[in-house]
Length: 353
Image 1 (cartoon, rainbow, N blue to C red):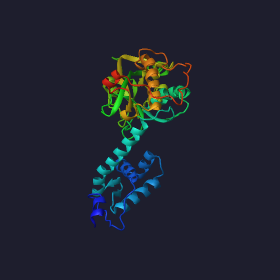
Image 2: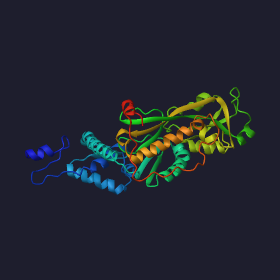
Image 3: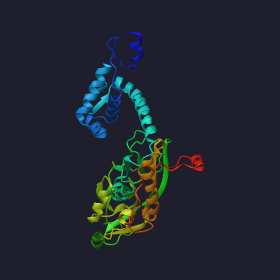
Image 4: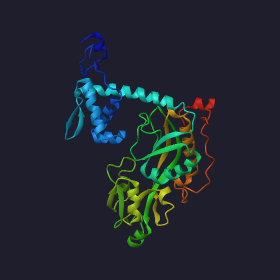
């Protein structure tokens, strides 16, 4: 191998090249490689990347051909990186990091209130609370298209899996700009039909009562096991993997369930029980610091900060009034509006959106 080809060949990968026929892999294939390495299957990687499974397979084959090295073992447990694949992960992550940093830096210079904003929020909060607010926000920023991923697993903002996140619990990553918006309270509720059938729910007489709980895959550690520790004597009759399932079961009269106060407090068919038991978590608005001056991101972030501040009593369970009220939408944002200037005092404080 000549000196030029030797410098270009990835270390530990074993790609054989010659000066006349050097093969250099497509940098974009690193993205497909990392998705398969992290998720363990072509199908999961395809869903994550929003492409066809066959496309992922072709890109992995092309990458292995360019490097003349097998990167994955295909077995019953999925696609597992070989030793060469493990060595390539670190290099591919450096490629990914540089590409995403450049993308964020360029996106942060945008001055137009237009484009796509991808948001993520906890499952029930996203579907039942955020979506109605997005309808109002569309009237303010008609040139912005929205994507919402409502799930309880936290997406990675550094990898641009989302632009903005609404998260329960304080985020810890230093590269994220965060703002606390409210405290969100959950409490215990039953249906009126359940009370008529099973009788009053009292702390000293839980025998004979039933409850609905979250199953083990539910990704909020603060909630797993919370019900069983407080409802000793009652029997768990159903476990589900999200708040929408708890809400459906409680409405159907299956038993006691832990529900957000903003969701259940305004439901005339539900009654709060055992008020001494409640769970409160902080709600944070989070974005990557490279995007905080992008006009479309700033408009969306400021809108949610205002709306959720107004809804704070309902979110905290202080008020049973519905959190969302029909209000006239403000005037639309102009397509040429620029980001709000950041004052010197805010720059000194730093770290908050």
